[in-house]
Image 1 (cartoon, one colour):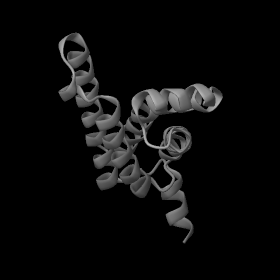
Image 2: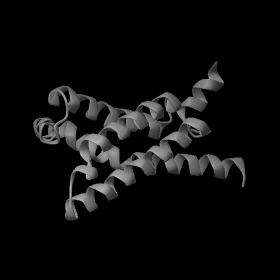
Image 3: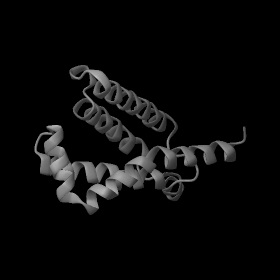
Length: 138
């Protein structure tokens, strides 16, 4: 596989990996009071602060990863964020029946997302990124 194809696939992976977060981060930003209420419902600590953190990470850090800006450190923060939200938001081990099944599915989907984020830490953003452009200017 050519380097151009690899870099294209890394770009596509960054976009696909962040699409969910951009959509729901924007929703949280546009409906901030509802996001705070949702954080209260999940039992998140400091719901107002938790909502701010969610918006910053999901929307703004999501855009940064799509653009390939500070990809490795942001992917590391994102992986920790996804782990935390998985534990808080999808505690399938406390549930039963269909609630348990649905939360278990979402929990493990999030674990898979963490795998993608860890790969970004290893590979970086590739040639089609601001990281690459900034490294060439130094």
